[in-house]
Length: 125
Picture 1 (cartoon, rainbow, N blue to C red):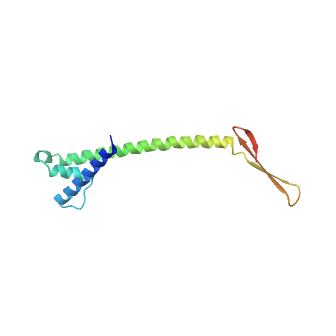
Picture 2 (picture 1 turned 120 degrees about the vertical axis):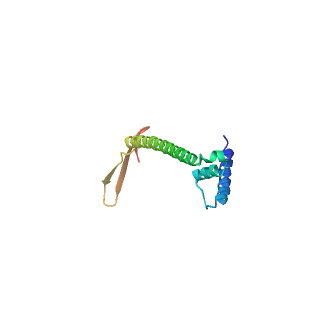
Picture 3 (picture 1 turned 135 degrees about the horizontal axis):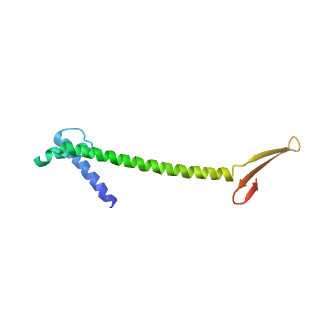
């Protein structure tokens, strides 16, 4: 579905919320409260379902949020595994760096940094 469709739905819900707030004279209504109030002020045959609609919508919102959290946890866990694997590879390939200070005279200090690169072997910097 196109994102314009969802935007139109949200705009419609906000307009309904404003209209229902004016109708029942309250400052604001939440998502499930909008549906409950719409059923309460709607046709008499649907008014008896207003409380059930509010409960059903809150349950579905909780299920949706739980689903988002589960997907987020899986996403974070998968990325942490990848980061740890890359970190281990880095530790194995290049972290071996030793500084050798060789003093020939008091003013001359040579620093030799050795590192290991997995593609080319030992590299002297």
